[in-house]
Length: 397
Image (cartoon, rainbow, N blue to C red; front, side, top):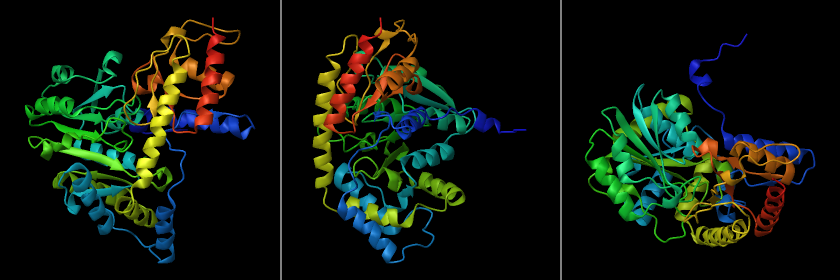
């Protein structure tokens, strides 16, 4: 007989991981599936970074690491913040974790108590609301409008603040929409936070380097609230290191110490050779980052062009990350011989089974009229996938 905790029963499975597994299962049966469900660059980790990981193994860097991460990596992250963002975080304010998801979990579990309210702009990354639930907090979801590239406004934020508000979760560039908050938009949000001294900002900046509008802007730059900002970042997206599992935070010292305490009990610390590879990623030649960014921009322009050729889709042009988030409710109520499309989940299943394309339903991101499509794959696969999608959708009447 199963006796699972209420904590676990309250959690929903990751929709992105679920769709990724469905595509893997079909591939294992020999079906040619194009997986556009997962947020993973198709590039290999650059050779100079791989060599650093190999060298660490050869040098027997294989004993327990410090809970907060190796000092040289914390210093490299501190230097990165200063060099790229003009932000001052000492190495003691840096905590390295097993991916940015783990960093986010550490912060939420360290900050949020039962009944605390966390403002979550939607569309949101699937894990945000689940981690708040895990911490027994209350998600206060506010919806960005498609006409504003799905970004929320300061007025929307201010309208939901209560004495129980503990934090707001921001993501720029955004997963799932690719929207990017400008410096002026962030400044206006910072003004709202400034007026509410018990409120913190948790800002997910993992897509920082996949940015098509110029310099990345962090809400951590505003002096009036910098002591209440926790930045989440990592090496997965910029350096094609998703499997190395290295994320990090820059935070007020007391938050960093709390996360170290939690991580010391849960994980000990991140994998040793992956940390040494991350040092080289951050300190080394950044040409791989700029080259990858150019490729993502080309792919974005390609997929937007092809989506415009499909009737009924509304797709804002993303300014960063590697996702498009088209509105697909034009197809709700339509059918073919085997299925009636009543939701974005139905549509994703239909596309998987009939077009052999893996996508993710918008329900998981708090916007049920959309689906998320990753274009972190080759031009040829994008062209073929959009051709399959156009053909499959034309069969719905």
